[in-house]
Length: 312
Ligand code: PBG
Image (cartoon, rainbow, N blue to C red; front, side):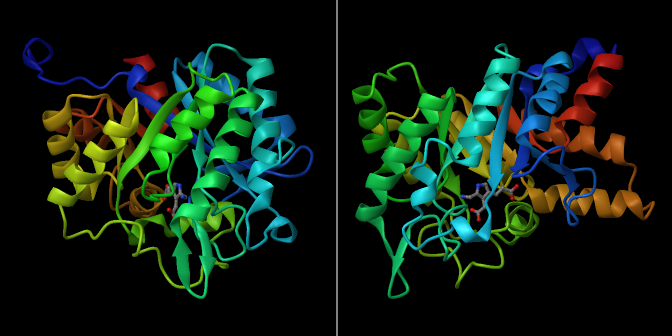
């Protein structure tokens, strides 16, 4: 009877698994602040992704832990076709063709300031950043990445990235915009995982959104859709379910929520202490994204959730 009247249902098709890649051979390195999460070397990443594919997960998102020696003020490593994330994309794509690959478009893994854009004299250079983001998106598409996910929050980026992809022959490349991305404390474990936290000078409040604002999210999403975004994302997840709901009901476009690193860390920490039951709480959280209107969820719990869903 409960199944008959259930209004929302979480499925494996709703899950996107974000994972971290690192240089080296035969490396599976745990991330301290994210129990259960690893950084994989390129030779290991295809195996991990095949596991996700076998569980039925439709897409993954790759994030590089970039060696500090490769970070420069202009973030040029992001445009290197042989950079870590491009090598990882190629490894994944040659091992499994039937899973979507998403890559961030932003300079934070490559920029010695830890910021998503270029910085000069403590200020973000919006328009100068756009050019590099376009090159980064094209290089990633050339490596085989299916979905470009601009997470940088520079103004006007979606339009120029769309044109750059089209001009390079990637008309079929999809853009999933991190459209409503808040300046959040919940990203701290992620910055540890990709090694950008130590470098970060100041904060990201001049380009990421104020947690107090909701109308502004609608404005940001409208701009990105007008510029050509195919899918939009709200981030973080749980503290912003109202935004997920507003975005989905206003625009009706495919809308995703990012259940971010800090949210994952909180759940894991409580579970490890025996204060929360991991499986039960995780499924409740993931279902709440569906109830709010999300078409999919980026979550570090993706494999755990898929295993549970497949055993039901
Ligand atoms: C980088 C980026 C961040 C996340 C995804 N892409 C961090 C940030 O903006 O500082 C966060 C993801 C997470 O916390 O799980 N542009």
